[in-house]
Length: 494
Image (cartoon, rainbow, N blue to C red; front, side, top):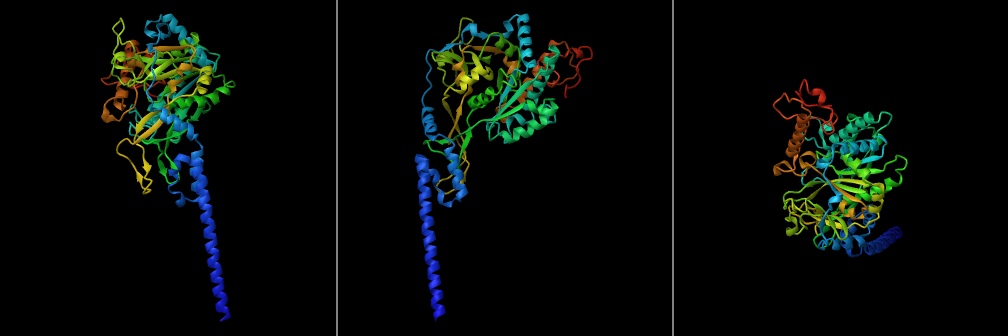
């Protein structure tokens, strides 16, 4: 009987101990949740599944949230809904607007040599904006890594491969022009969490083919920013995280600023910044770079002439607040359709995301508060009621972005350089079924450019099909004279 009594007492003690521990844990959990609610404030709905999370998962959610100054981001999100203020809107003045076609040939040669000299001295960095998610293209791989279909090998005909080849070709041209130099174009690649892994893997294959030293490659990663629903709330991407997206190409400035402060060692003075998706982009164009150096320009933009008032392209304008790119949807129709005395559109400088910056400009831009812009997108999320993952069929929320051109107003001497659309602008943005700005139009436009080079060099084309000239053979049509006698019978490939 005594043993039975002792066993009963032990069981009761164990039960009391269990109740005590459970009570302590519940109190701790409530205190833990209360502390988290104080941190999350108006966004405490993100704690919906708090009780289901492990301590590590809870910490993960708290750590992610505290990465951001949510008070400032919430404020910026509200401000992003306000209409754009456009006061004193005027075209860029003629003395800051240059068209290479009307510049004397000898002056153009001088610009070219000045640009090559900067390359020979290692003063130039080519910066490719490659952090965006290729949602319109419908690809899960980074846009710059996709084979364009010129060859059977993506390490020779992807956008990155063509850009690397242009860099390599320019270094060869600079070496020929300045024999005692060691030409080097630093290649800065801006990635994001969405593109970094695939981009780096591809570049490791591309660099050796283009004979570019791995030490020339500088990979930067732009920050992310939370996505918002239509009510100003955030999306759970899992029970212990919320949805974020890259913070736009304007995130480049803070990334470059850190590099500018250390660029004394490698002597970088100038940056050519361009979008990854333009198959005709003349990376580190010596004409453009040389012009900017000669004119003491701190910020410049290449543009194409806009001929259709309804074309969906931003226009670079002068406002009372400085230089600004006005999106096609924000430009009043009467201004978009206005024409000057020559009959051309008054506001015609179509932005193609190809820019020149000095280190001083980058420093000023990095310390300038950029506004956020909204992009209405399909954003997957976790249903806060059921915990089930949802992939929406229509747009349901906003991705927020900083735009690189919002800092143009920091420029002390801004210039525009107008180029021919057929020669320098053919972007890859859409899937093939759209039929515009897609793989086939990129190939068509590149083939057409190669044909112009051959015709200008008086080289006979001996086959009845388009010819692909890889940039390792020619940057912009130079060096093809050797084929005048025998003609071209096949693609020029590495």
